[in-house]
Length: 556
Image 1 (cartoon, rainbow, N blue to C red):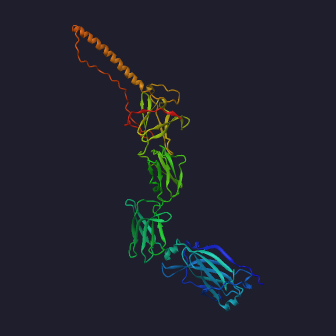
Image 2 (image 1 turned 90 degrees about the vertical axis):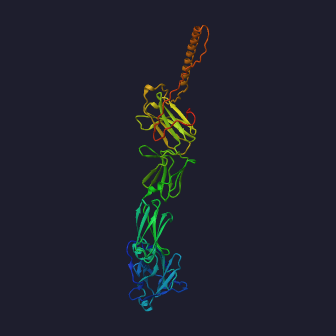
Image 3 (image 1 turned 120 degrees about the vertical axis):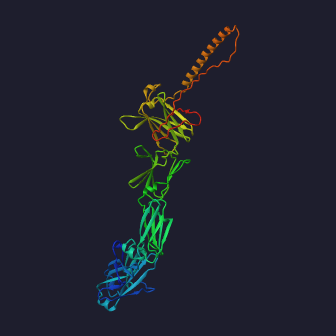
């Protein structure tokens, strides 16, 4: 019984053409097969139905057969743009009497296995038996960016004495291939931008000879989806130029070009790839549902958050409002459309702020302040039915933050004004009001701080700190009624005296004359309100629906 050793050599080292990506490939005039000096060899096609492998002979059990296998790409050309690629296989073979040659098999995805036999002449192989010989073959055609599996076998085919490897052919981004291999010739694109007309003027050079050329604009997503702008440059045209209109300079808007041939490789350039600020447009707000939304026009890795913009330009994030986005739509529900409420977009190390409500079109609350009889009166008018928190805060010299001392909640009805006369508290010079809508998920906070009042006009003393009192409107009304009654009594007495004197002068007859009594009308004076815009909040005007209502605040 013959004892043999399995000499299968599987080399999944993925030899590839990466080293040739940025350099010129070796040129050959035509493919050939070469063997060591003194060893005659020639190639022939493999048998249509090759016999099964044989058990290795006794002289094959000692050592491996294939050594130092190397794979590379070479190029043969018939013209400037008519070059083809070939796989060069080099190996050192341990020659024995049982080996009459070798078989080279290549296999690519979706293709049948192709094999060729390199046979050694009998006289030369017998004379060189036991020596190591070199074999080189570069007659295997390959395509750019193709993965090829190579199998080397002995001839005759001895079982398990094989070498297997995988090779990746150079890609079309290799400069040599882009100039000389037709599958990789895409042409070179250059462009000029006319932002006023929103047009791109595209020039094409180094395009494939004797072929027309396609140009189009597309948005690069998973694939590059066409925008509808396209052009065809005829091969007969001397000037290879076309003009393509665009609507928005988006970072994913690209110019794509390719030769008019089947499976042509395409080239793509994106003129506005750095214009990320164009993505932050298209913010939508539904005032009925109170939903704020934004959808990216291009794929982008960004974080979107809501923030409140301060007077110094810094936008403070609202709690729990940040969302990560790449392609999908971003939605914020139950949003108060305050002019200071903004969206913050962060991509990489850059941030952009967009404030969709800065024009105040959807603002729910209007606030006005007036000074009357030494105290400030705050009036609130809501455009919708809403609930607000109203807090009194006090600034201190030791802390820049305004410390809230009391918070009250107020329900406002649509288009009904509510007046809050805050006796003395807002005249101390260090007091502010914080007003925020609380029946939504995301809302900005209004801050109204007031200057110190003229103390000579303070008619009512302040109660203990934090106590708010409503000013009674019945006091001036009572004074007015008392004055009217007093005047009426005096006039009545004077009229009675006058009539009695006249009766005596007429000898006891009473002459009836029409008397007209003057009426003194007492009107409660009203100070004209001059609204002031505080903190960017639109001041209230006198409501047109009914009388101004006074509301009692319930402490929380």
